[in-house]
Image (cartoon, rainbow, N blue to C red; front, side, top):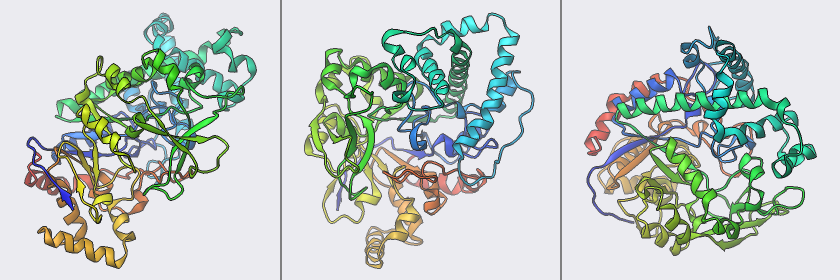
Length: 490
C-alpha cells in the first residue's frame, strides 16, 4: 500500500536518451531531428525532458563509464548544423534505419566529416587555433588525454607507454607532435557546447527544462582518474585496488560489479571536496536539474576488492554525507538536485536526503505489487521505470498469472479500467507527485527490445536502442496531451 500526500503545480516529464532519438546519421544528436522531438514533446504536454549523461562514451558503451566528466561525446554533434556553419558541404545519410546504435561505426563515419570541418575551420581563419586554445583551456587535459589514447591504440591509460602514462606527473616528453589531435578535440568540444546551448535555448523557448544525470563515480579509463590519481585507491601500475558496485538487491541477485575506482575521501575532504563539487557545477552549466545517480553512496558506498569477480562480497563504507553537501550548497542551488535513492538503502540515506529537502524517486515497477506499506512523498519524482528497468510492456509480460491477476485487481479497485498498459500509464500520471516522468518506449507500448540498459551486463544490446521514427510519437501527441491535461499536469 502507498500512503500519499497532495501537492499542486504538477508536471509531466519524458525520459529519452539523446542517443536513442531518430537521426539519419545513425545516432541521436543536437540537430534538427532533436529539435523536432522537442516540438513534439511540447505538443504532447510535457514540460521536462530527462536524458542520460552526454560524456564521451567509454567501456561497454555505457554513459556511466565515460572518458571525461566534463567533455561531451563527439557523436552528438549534428553534421547538419555544421553544414549550416559553412564548414561542410553535403553529408550523406548513414544507415538511418538500423535498429540499434553501432557506436564504433557511427563514430568512424562522423569523424571523417568532423576532421574535414576542423581543417576547413583552420583554412578559413589563420588565427583560429590560437583563439581556440585560449577559449577552450578548460578542456586541454581531456584533449591531451584523447591524443595520448590514440597514440597508444586506444588502450586504457595504465597500459600506455611510460612517458605518456606518467606525463601528468613529470611532463617528461615534448607534446608538440600531438598538437593537431589536441586542437581537433578542442574544436569538437567548442562545437558541442555551441550546439547544445542552441538546443537547450530552443527547449526553454518551448517551455521545456532538462534533467541531466551525474554518475557518482568516474571511469577508471578517464581523464578524471588519469590526472587525479591521488583521489583514488590505485596500485603502482595505475589499476584500481578497490572498485565500486552494489550488493545483491532487486536489480541483481549477485549484485552489480561496476568496476569504477573508489574515491579516497580523506584526500578529497582535505581539499573541501573540490573535485566532486566541480563535477556538479559543470553539470549545472549543461542541465536545468541534476539527478545525482547512486545518491545512497553519499551516505554509504559499497567497496569491492578488485580481485573479486562479482559484487556478492563487499563492504559498506561511510561516505562524506553532510560534510559534502554543506560545502556543495554554498555554491550550488539545492532545488536543482534530484536524489536517485533506489535500491536497498538504510534509513540514514533518507534522513540525509530529507535534511536538504532533495526530492527522491518512486518507481511503479518496484512498488505497485509490494506487500509492504510504502510511504511516498509527493515531493519525490514518480517513474513507471528508469533506464535500468524493463519497459512497462516487458515488465508486464514477465509477471506470473497470479501477479497479473493481482495487478488488475489493484487497478479495478482504484477505478482504472480497460487495457492494462493504458491503465498503468494513467495511474502513474495521476499520482500526487509534483513530477511524473514517463519513458517514451512505455508510451509507445514497446517491449523489452526498447529497454535501454540491463545492469551488470556488457553486450552488443545494452545502450544501443534507437527509435526509428518520430511518427509513432507524433501520432499519439493528442492522446498523450489529453492524459496529461486530465491529470492536471498542463
